[in-house]
Image (cartoon, rainbow, N blue to C red; front, top):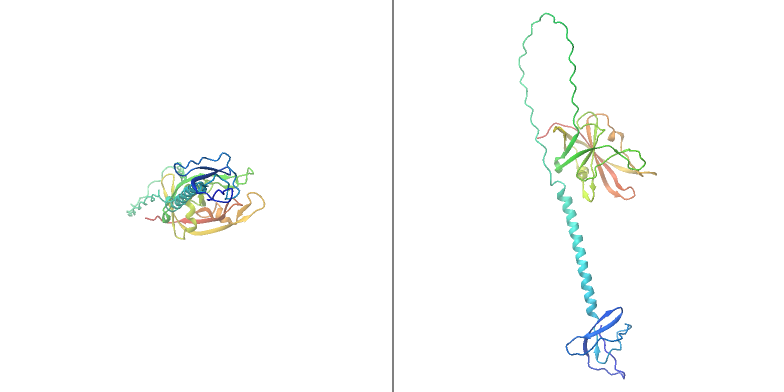
Length: 307
């Protein structure tokens, strides 16, 4: 902003270049060229209009301070924008590549050698032997719990931890299957069946946890016929194939936890035929419920080993 100091009788004097800056709504002047001899005002006037009564022959310029502030503001704005862009790129790369980066294919099953039948010798009858005590039956060893799951089509390899029931509504009663607080670890409900044994084996995982996409986020994209492999603690591999992929919507409730899901009994029933049920969240996140508005259930049945 530039102007002239009016002469007392209306005339104008030659302009002496100076630079003005603003502080607390006051004007200060200093020489703009060497030898101008203009000193800062002793009693700078407040800014009311662009034509201020300054020393004779002085013109002033306020633009420098404004430009300096604009440069600082633009620099801060550029830095914040760069941080946001880098954060968005990191999240995109995290979702596209980090999920399967540590994938190791399951061990190849060893083919069982076919048995060649041999001749059974004829046993001649002998004299009846004295009766002896019958041997005690050898107890069948209990299968080991699951420790790892593979979903080969998506190159997902996920460790498994056992969990019990959790108290989700804070009433002291554990009535929901617990989860593991990690995006890359699945939870096996320890009261359900061992995978491959008679009954339902329930394994769940997060769709997202701590801002990181979970391994079980691929469940909605699974198809009938996809392979799933479970490894037990003793190293045994058990093979399954997807039988169904079903989504269930949340149902609002009037009391904690204020939501439920329209799950048929057979989804979480522990009895019945041998099967595994993989479960996770899906759909949109609902802030009222504090969770997603759908659940996904992938039912898998035992299958022959795949090479």
